[in-house]
Length: 87
Image 1 (cartoon, rainbow, N blue to C red):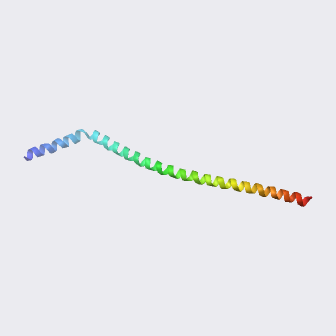
Image 2 (image 1 turned 30 degrees about the vertical axis):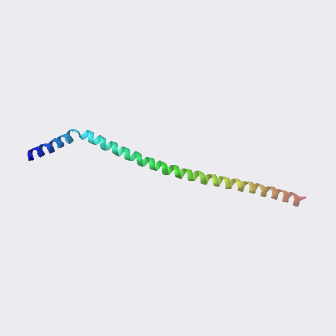
Image 3 (image 1 turned 45 degrees about the vertical axis):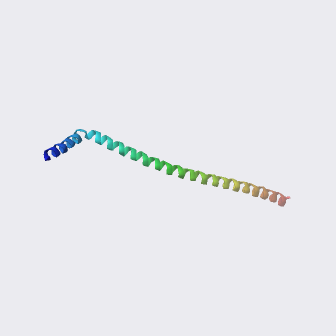
């Protein structure tokens, strides 16, 4: 019984020794898939951050536009006051 167990163990060891390249390839594929999966998660986080920044930029652009309109109105008022004072 021990010889059969011993030969089975040797058979398994021989199989592993003869197919090391296959084991290395499978391990490499598993590593590559795991890296791709984590890359997708990073891309998703980056996409959420980009969307948030785009929303903030839109809000700031709207606020700047409103300020520009107010500044233009004030300039017109100042120009009218200068004209009235000069006359």
